[in-house]
Image 1 (cartoon, rainbow, N blue to C red):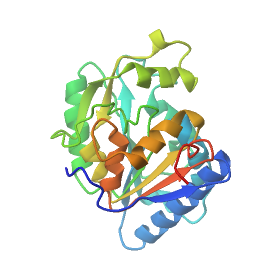
Image 2: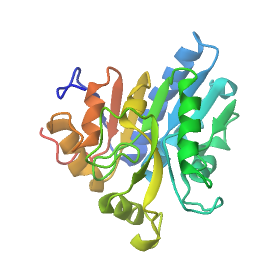
Image 3: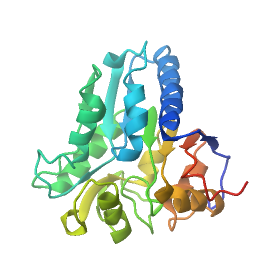
Image 4: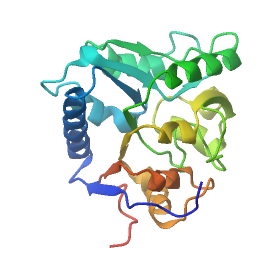
Length: 252
């Protein structure tokens, strides 16, 4: 991967976090409607995080979308949590979105007793057809999915097991997903950066003051695994949605 951006990202700064979510949902819904006019079904990868909550709440209320022609995936999952743990991203997405719209189907990452086999099986599912849309955020450390820095932007794998760094794990506590750092799993399954970038269009919601430094670094640094989010600058169709807090360190 080259270390320079091929095209500028589209950046939208909303008046507040709620409006950011609504704006993103409107754009995503419009893109889904348009693409369903030319394809029999779509495949969408979802992020699971509080940063996506406002967007998903608005998206599920958007009218005129034939969700029965949409197949959903998600981009990461903890290893070691009970199947019914609310912190599991599959469970979070079911509660926030999947159980609210009549999807054609969704594929949850279930690490089980053999996470390596899960990685291989999920990679096969993703490779069956193109991914139309990726709905994602970025982490406080600049990660994409669970690709913490330094991330391999040329990873030959599509799905793999990773060790989560302390900044990433602390973010889960700060987001009130876990009560304490020692309760946050140390390993997870994640889609890799090249796998995410194979999505034909990307919509990235990044609210909150704790993401301001990561947003600044994403915009100002060259493309590098040290700031994985900079890889979004290599994508020809990536739109980023910010609020006043997350955009507060950007140069005017």
